[in-house]
Image 1: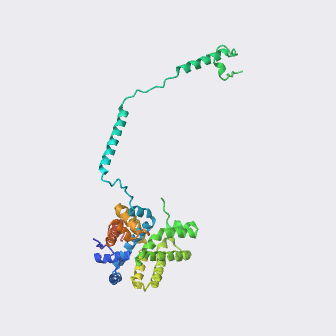
Image 2: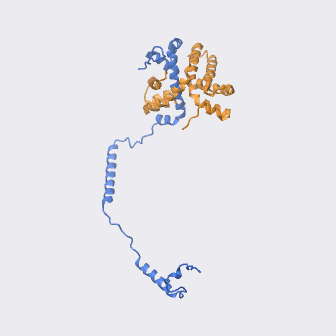
Image 3: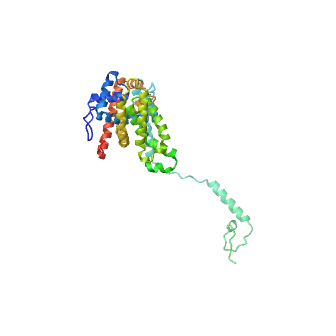
Length: 166
Length: 185
């Protein structure tokens, strides 16, 4: 599985146990008994040295990401606690009850949406309108006679006085 | 988003800004370079800190900003060997001749490393989300592999095997991508 392929400019492909030596060296888990093998391999094989440098590059990148991303480790290492009620044997009955309640609610909402309700128009307060109109009429009748010509409307005095060309 | 090239970066006339931009751009390449020589992540951080200091002190001597990655890898090579000499008596420390070869060949591969990292972005996107999250979690500084394995209901060994498979899959994806580009990974 870990057999490295030979490529252009490379030596012989590495054997799995040789690759294991390199990985153990990088992990710091190489047994003392295998250290001599590792040294002999690195001394004689340019491919082993090249592979070690390439694996060290991968290792350095992962180390850099590990230093940056401590939040990832926290989420992986300590999974969120599951409340005990969720793990209880009544889990399924509780879920079914909740699902039924949700379905009923959805039906009620859907029903209210499809029932036709004619648009309501707000009814004016007729008494208030009449009273307001009467007040305006009364006020107009008390106003002094307009100094404007007859063509102006009775309500012209309520407006800005027009300016005529000289 | 427009990405400045090295020559555009060097046109800012502020050496601190130029250095920061260049170093940030090539930091992963440098980390990968050092990582190949030193298996412990803490050692990698320590060496990279020295590399950044020395590189900043010598930045004025770098004439061509497009050669920053290679130039910084040469500094890193020196710092890796210096660090290794200080730890020579520790267990599982590679012999100096091996570290020197890894570093020398690594300097020549600096442009390839940048292309590998670009391809890696796409390969990580293709990786199934659960595997990607698991790998990133495993590499987070506060994660202990033992604890993570326990939480995932796995043995430590099987988790390390899974991480190795993920690395291998990503590497194969990167090599396929670079082969499609017509390059020779």
